Amino acid sequence: MPTALPLLAALTWSLLPLLWQLLTSLRTPEALVLQGPSAWLQGWTLANYRQVLQGDPPFWRYLFNSCLVGAASTGLTLLLAIPAAYGLQRQRPALRGGISLLLLAAAMFPYVLLFLALLELARALSWGNQLLALALPYAGLSLPLAVLLLRAAFADLPAELEDAARLEGLNLWQRLHRVLLPLLAPAIASTAILVFLFSWNEYPIALTWISRNDLLTLPVAMARIAGSSVYAVPYGAFAAATVLGGLPLLALVLVFQRQIVSGLTQGAVKG
Amino acid sequence: MTTAGLHCEQLSRRVGDRLLLDGLSLSVAPGESLALLGPSGCGKTTTLRLLAGLDPVSGGRIRLDGEDVTHSPAGERQVAMVFQSYALYPHLSVLANLELGLEVRRVPAPERRRRIAEVLALLQLEGLERRRPAQLSGGQRQRVALARALLRQPRLMLLDEPMSNLDAQLRDQLRPELRALLHRAGHPVIHVTHDQQEAMGLADRIAVLEGGVLQQVGTPQELYHRPANLFVARFLGRPGINLLAGEAGVQLAIRPEQLRLVESGGLPARLLRREWQGSQQLLWLDTSRGELLLLAAADLTPGEQLQVTWKPDDELRFSSASGERLA
Image 1 (cartoon, chains in turn orange, green):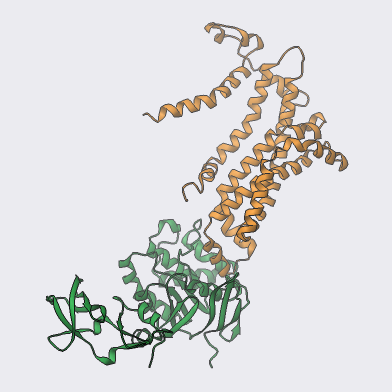
Image 2 (image 1 turned 90 degrees about the vertical axis):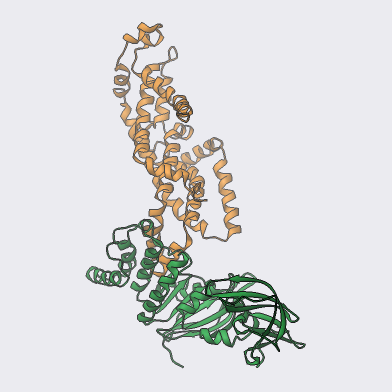
């Protein structure tokens, strides 16, 4: 099987760091620096997990915060992006092209340049330390790409489908709800995952908007674990936090696997 | 003037500076089937979309059973359409495809079930209710699309190239069935095609369109034997009509089946090539009046030098300048 080899190489390339992370999270700090094959027989522990889960606040609190912000950002983004994408697709080609170009420019803009301005905004509106307020900049930053992706998905649907629904008396909402959105499910799922991932990983805005310990999102909380001591890097605890932080994403991808894969390849095969 | 059926007057559609349809006036009676025939880009699909309300009208009026529907939204016209791609909802079963429109129009559930059962029986689709469109054959998909259109209880039925996605054999088989079905339904039917055989097989009358302008409307026989202009004469009939050099300002035309071979006294002709087609054969002849096509019996073995003749009554005479037929 000649195709299996490159596949194996690719899997090793992407999975080995994760495996290493998992192993690190299960070892005592002393065991991590031991050498030789005999080192694998000792030093296994769950203490790292105990440490992060029993911290103050416990680690699951950060997971919950991140899930909440992620769900709110994703929901808000889709709520705005789906009608926007539909509307954009219905425009004259020239206008549609112009708007798409602007959206592309917005999607490519390095958002780190915005975070000071966003911080000022949060201060002025007293959005600091409001967990759900994070969903607003996250949705705003995700929207351009989400609209572009969904617009392309709308464009792939045959126009006659919607015409048929119009003739049958379906109004705009019914056409979207009963005909178009079910057909767009794969594209919506893959867009949702991208938005959720962005919100899950986002650091500078979360760092500057949230200062209360119990409201931190995952990236900020993990950075705090890593920087908790100036004398040592708590590798074990850090690795345990990373593993825990990755679990919800893993679950999400497993659940929506089919939709994501067909969404990512959509258009590629249909030409 | 009767009010039942479809009447459109001076219907036009303009996009930018392009006139896609220019002042189309047509009437179709209930139970009558009209074919819109023409080459691609002639305005036939534009006409259908205007009648369905899918595109806005730039000028003129559409009246349906006496009601002016020119500017009514598509969903309120009670016009059904069978699309070229059939446009079945791919994520829904056959049953759900048929039921969606009824449900949205708030038809009560028992009546929905009764009407769907009726139309499934009529179109011989029983047993396929649970299938998805992707699991149906082309002919079955066409019937589901037709079933969905009939459930609309339309005041006007539109069909856009209903046969173009089927293979030739299936087309010949389905044409009479479709014709019988459409006639029984009792509403005006307009169907668009670029295939003249399909138009003649399905329609009571044919409207020939070219460049957004209606060229002629009439029965297939009228169009074939008394074409209004050179375009209609050349567009209808396979093999195509022969054009002969005539007197100044006049273009003569004669159908290949109206030419006859004679022993003497005809126009001298030289056989260029022939094509045997089973039931008949087609001869290409070179004459002093131009190249001619002649349809001959299949068992004939022609020599190289021939003579052709025809009845002067069969000649069609057109003005060379305008293309209009001269009386």
